Image 1 (spheres, one colour):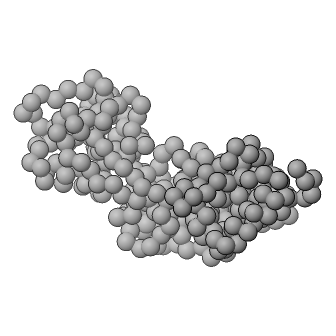
Image 2: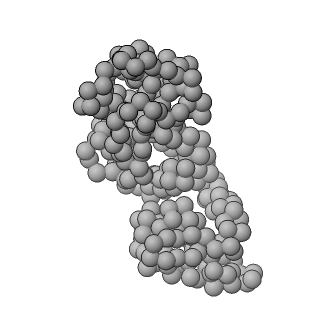
Image 3: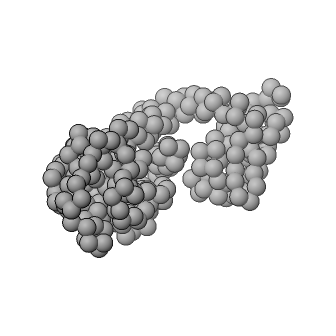
Length: 282
C-alpha cells in the first residue's frame, strides 16, 4: 500500500457511495456528478492498491478490502471534520422537526452523524404531528422537517419507503363478531385516518379504545394489550405481532419518508447529507 497522503475528498466519495449504495445518489448528495465520483474512487483505489467497491448495473457493494478500510475511512473523515470545525468560531443552530409517527430507531444514529459531521452545530430536534411541524416549518421556525410524503405535496428528498402493518400484543384476542378495538393517535393524524378508512372500506367494525397523544403512548397501549394499531413495521415493539392474516385485516399502503429543507449554504447542506445518510443506513 502506498504511504502517500490520502485525498480526503476521495475518501468522502467512497464513504458516501457506501452509505447510499449508489453512485448516482452519492453524487447528488455531494453536489457533483456520477463521473466525478467514479474518478475519485478509482484514484483512491489506485492509491491504496485495492479495489474497494464492487459494482454491477443492479447493485453496489463493498469488496472485502473495502469492508476492512471503511471504519478507518470514517475515522479519517471524522478527524478531518473536527479539525475543520475547530476553526469555526460561530456555533450554529440546526432546528429539525421529525413527525411523531416517523421518529424511530434512526434518531440516535442521525444525531451522532450530525455531531460527528459538525461539532460546532447546536442541534434542536422537535417531534410533533406532521401538521404542526409543517406549519412551524412554513413560519421559518424549523430549518428542516422529516415527514411522510402524503403529509406535504411539495418536492423533498426521498429518504426511503415506509411499510405499515396491523400490530397487537402476543396475548391479544378479539371475539368473533366484536368490533376491533383500535389504538390510534389523535384524530388529526393522517395515519389514524388511513387505518380507519381502510377498515371502513372492507366493512370491518371497529371501536376506538385508546387515543394517544404521541407514538410512545400508542405503542405502549398496544404492548399492554388494549387493542390493535396501524404501525410502521420498523417501529412496532418487539413484544407485538403482525396480525393482518389472523383477523383478515386490509393491507395498508406503503408510503415514502421525505426530508424538506430550504437550506442553500454549504455547511447546512452538509448537515442535511449527514441526515440522509444516517436515515438510509437504518
